[in-house]
Length: 300
Ligand SMILES: [Zn+2]
Image (tube, rainbow, N blue to C red; front, top):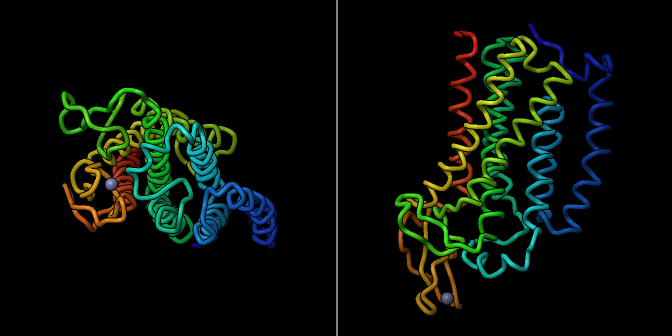
């Protein structure tokens, strides 16, 4: 039995055409803005556009959460940009996000959105398709927590603590460094995604319509915590498996393979495990945790 999609339910047989038209009207101005403001490279823009339209067609809830992540991270990246310049020298990439960064932040959520679509449309298995929704929220929560934590954390004047040993301090901008400011921002980043999800669910009982109000409230609240934990997993991976290098000329630590026009030396982690991989795996793991929790909803 094939289930009806939201646009068919709203606009009838040709609803998909109307939905695509709305998607183009909303997305084109946003991506022109993103290009002009240099938030995304051209290919990054096209890929984000693909994710955006796919999420919109699968469920506007997904689209809105991506929108919250995209807009809030773009604004935070530009916030006090000059003050971040020195610290950003450590990062492999600057403020303009490219395709691999868009993939790192979007692929995990895309897998869960597809899972939701398959289980909802083809099987109408409410337990599994709803669990995919919780997974999606936690995945976007994680990437938002990571971006907020990084962009606000590097503005802190105090040196961050090393996540593996909190009595030790590391240089600002080091992956695996945590500060009270950054951790607080990370928590808010994850929570905002869940609050928006709650508001949309409250306004439009879809797609979690089979769950009772308190279940939806409890489980979406849990996704905020899972998203925050995902942000911590991101920092843990950053401190362990992510490649971190040292400049052979100036001695500075960096994620870059080259510094001062010379190749850098590997200090810890794996050369193959870059920040993009860390972002993907941390958000995917958080999604799996939320998926497990979501499957639990019918047992309580
Ligand atoms: Zn150097």
